Length: 494
Image (tube, rainbow, N blue to C red):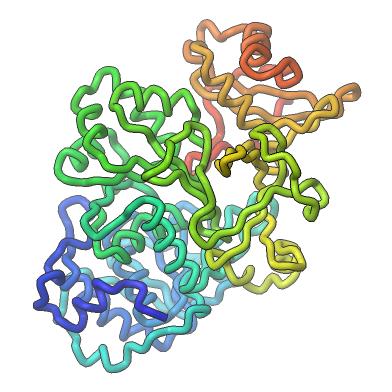
């Protein structure tokens, strides 16, 4: 297949070319041009080219970006490791993926769980162009694995999704079409680098386009404002980040001005509440667009840059991606695309993973006989094709009183109440209804939480009476993972 990184390949071939001196990566005050990235990554690629797989200690640093690029240049699958993972989880991932090496910055302190792996230090100081390496740099088949990314493991040990080079290239090119993403764009983000959003979209995306990325290291609204004021054109974030931006905007005119200059504001990894959409749009004149994907599929849908930024939706299928909603049997298509009828999303296309590593049973169960991947996500679809996620099949589809109800729309309704700072909705068994709707609320003012009856009436007026919460619990904070997703399985009431 064609090179994953045309600009980098050109810099390898001609380090004195005009485009070779364009900025590629910047983390804080450390940066590399394309020529410098080529000169840094090529020797590391030569070092690992005979490795079966390599683990990468995926800190949010320049070293991680260089390590993954080097592995891809060498055609060696990279296994990103979350530095916050516990010893048991790390042990499982390493024993399952069997990397022969681990790539890490020299200053990184690795847990003893990784002591059995040979360690290769990542040196980001360019050591020459290494032109002779080009004679051994062969193009890799499209189906060769590029990355093995482990799922969150909410229903058992994490599974390694084998992501082929084809999926990386096709997803990034489809996003380029949807977002009008070019080499002139400068992306700013502060996402972790051990998953699809931060690593594939946030680092490999700009490099495939021949553009540049500025990573903040740690999310701060001041950092976002500075980068967007200094030429960055795109911002990637998760709902927690955009919520903090929305909270800061009334008292930070510089932030509002900076966001107004951005060409594209993109949110992903979880649903962005409509309330935050509207607050950001009102303060900046810019609308955040959402996209939808997952580890196994990379990206499936997005609001297009030239389309309607409809709050609460994840847009339309990306070029090359087929999407359908199915009934509970996983085969019968949902007949009514009316924005109300709920079905499970299934997708098919070149963006899909190849398999779960060492798990043929799980791989087979994930696909229908005719090749559709069962996402487990529930959604409704408007007549014009826009998709709105209402939750996960396992945790967010509530069957109450004969209705199928998505938790997401109730959460959005609750967040529109002035007394609610955060909200999550689950279902619990009910002898009469089958399941009753339960709301978990973080009040805007802990001293004066909104009464449960008031919240139920608010939802009933906004949506429908059968969607009102029957039980309300008040919390100081909702349990969240590293990506800001609410961990609903942790919401229990003694």
